[in-house]
Length: 91
Length: 469
Image 1 (tube, rainbow over the protein chains, first blue to last red):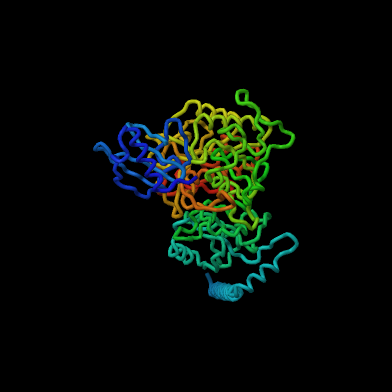
Image 2: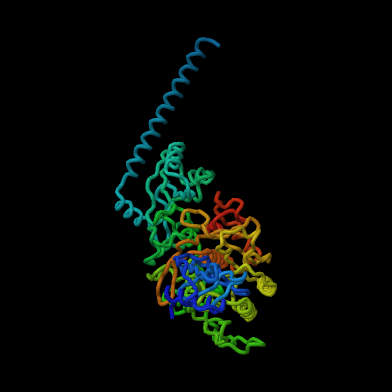
């Protein structure tokens, strides 16, 4: 089932709260922008992952918590956390 | 010298002057006649051309030539050349972007004019004007552009760029000229290693590979037996390579959407066999391990007698895998070309490698992407040492899930263009070894200033040159 922009933001908010072990209400939405990503893993491939090299439209979601900004990338198929402590995660 | 001799010499000189003057007048009269003959309405010309058909032979009626100027040669530069050679542009050829019909006003024969133009740096191709109707296929005339009737062909700028949608005329792979030599061969199998292929798509179904009825199902010593009727699926071991993303179907259409079928688009090959391999999921990503399994499948089928000579790999990452490199080398040892996307991070692969395109294995052809104006795509990776060639990869129309067509961009789209050209070469030269095939591709480019220092070949792939046209 295709993921909507609002659904992607909600998934990202829950994921970040879970990772930081905080209440989802303490995660602030900083910005949500339409963006073209370089490939089908949205430029956020996990280790050992290969992806189609096709420009992919999606959303760049920036969330704030504990005084830091975190970037999520999403499209209709997936939500990914970009460079969280140096690593990418597909959620 | 006596007085009589002087009179004899004067008389001889007078005769020579009169002969020269008469010859000059004859020449002027001939030019006038020729010019009058050439000023005929388009409809009249078409009728005259049709009248030149004798049996299956096409007879050249006029000492004209057809010239394709290189992309970027301006109208004013072409007009200056016309003045220099005392020629004129008789016609721009409808449906054949970049081609001009040239009329030699000195009445030189076509061969002389062809020789004259072929030396010019501004000229890509020149040939005598054998009058045929350009919209028809005529395999007997190898150097005449061939146009398919697929209804969306005019959107396929990569194959025939007429300057549509702000593009540059001639900034294409010269597919229409290549098709005069071959439109492909269904004996050539190209493996599309991707998210699978929608093998039921109406513009692909005819060109899909199926396991021959006499060939045993694929057996993997660890994974078991696969009923690989339509290809191979490395993800779920069910072996249905149906695409659930669209990426693989798009790449397959670029290589081999059926041509001249009055549907959608034409592939670089009108006839070919596409072997679908699925290792990427519905999201368009997959694991190195599954990619390796799929390549092993290709090698196994090759050994079993399938004429699979090309793997098209429109994927990658920045992570190096020795195991993946080894299996690509194994494909090389089995005479299989591996065409791979250079990547979309706008970086220099010589410094920041992208795999598998950056593996230093002799069968790997790394492909960068160009836009419709012969510019390196803003997203495309490049590399003087590690990226072999460039091909069109922006706003590429091709097949999509559900009998649809979509425009997509990426080195993913440039890669199957080159894989398709490799298949055309093999259609013409079925036994060409992989080393020679790779060399042929790298040597068959139109040099572009923007690619100087950016790729090994420094040019855009040219299908017609690759076929030796």
